[in-house]
Each structure stands twice: as C-alpha cells, then as structure tokens.
Length: 275
Image (cartoon, rainbow, N blue to C red; front, side):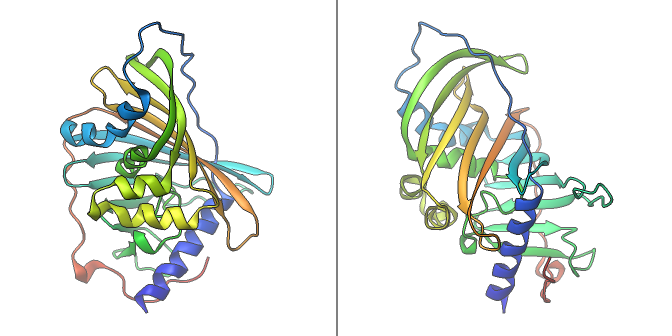
C-alpha cells in the first residue's frame, strides 16, 4: 500500500511540476581571469565535502519548465544542515494558468532518503505530513518536489565528467568563481557515500539521459554559492521528454538550521487523491 501511495504521489506531483514550472536563471557577466584555480573537475567534485565542513546555510531554490506553451516558476526558501543532511523549505507554487487559483505554500522537510510534505492537499488532512521514499521516485527527488535538495545538488557534482573555468564574477556582492560543464548521474551515484546513493541511482535510471549540464559558482573558500542544473526526464503522463532547469542559491553560512522530522503519528497513512 505504502509503495503504491508513493508512486501515486510521485506521478501526481511530477505532473503538477510539468504544468507549473518557470525560468529563474541568474547571469553573472563573468569576465575572463588569467589565474586558473586548479583542476576544475577535481575542484567541483569536492563541493559536497566543503558544504559539510561549512555546516549549514540558508538557501533559495527555483525550478523552471515549459510545457504546452506555459512557462511558470516554483520557488523555495529555507535552511539546510549539511552535516546531518536535513533541510526545511517553504515551496511556493504559482497560480494556475488562468490565474484563478492560489496554492498554499508547501512545507518540505528533506532527510536522507525521505521527503516530508505538509499542506500537500489532495485529501491529506491539514495537520498531517506525507512521507515519500526518494529512492522510489524516478527522478530521485531532483525534480518531483518542485525543488532540488541542496545537498543532492552538490552531490551530483561528484559525477562531473567535464568542466571548464569561465572566470571570476560577483554574486550578490560576493566574489565567486564560475565553472561550466557536464555531470553524470550514474558516476555521481557511484561516488556518493552509501547512504546517499539511492536517490541518485533512481535518477540515473529514470531520467532521459544521465548527462546533466551545469553552471556552478564557488566562493573563495570553495563553498557552493549557486548551481544551475539542466535535467531531462520522461513525463509518464504526457509522452515526451521534458527539460527542467533547477537553480539553487546558498548563502548565510552558519545559519541556525534545526530541522525536526515529524513523529510517526503525524504522518498520513491514507490514500492520496490523484491530481
């Protein structure tokens, strides 16, 4: 029963994302820099470990998708504890294309192998959470939740195949190094710690291609400040490959990031309505 509910939810939310994602890229206006900061591939593969050392940060996320001539944006904002792999996001859905429906923000708790959501709707009581095993999602929750888990975004860089240093620029007043390249989901899954592999392995199998183009911005301490991934996945409800751009911004390193996961009694065990 739980597995059927998870697949039902994954398909429903993925379909919702396919209807209501939008663009939010940031351009840095990078200039060429004669100083090359080491091997770009090895530098980027260390991004996840550097975040663990940093401890925590605030984060903003945005995911964009165009389908059926519609382009809209899902945005998230919250905090993340990289040492314990725990995060909390408030995800804001856009109005429907007609502009007549406003969706309540969804609270998402991110944990190793799990995604918890409140204000899920679709028949779920307002005081209950929905739990999804991210390893059962065909995208490993890189897309389904409407926001890419910030640590998963860094872990994906363990699978960098090719990368080039573009140059120095500024991001919100912070000097950063801009890199561009391609990561491989399957390589990232193999390189990740055992406890983090499940979602990446699922994405490697479920996406239309394991190749993920990216733009990455690191500060002078090597901390990830911004990453923009471009994913391609097969929409099972609407035939065809859908391209998604996911942008994650990290700032306010060291911010308090206490995340309390819901008790078992607070997790909804009933049937989730189709959307």
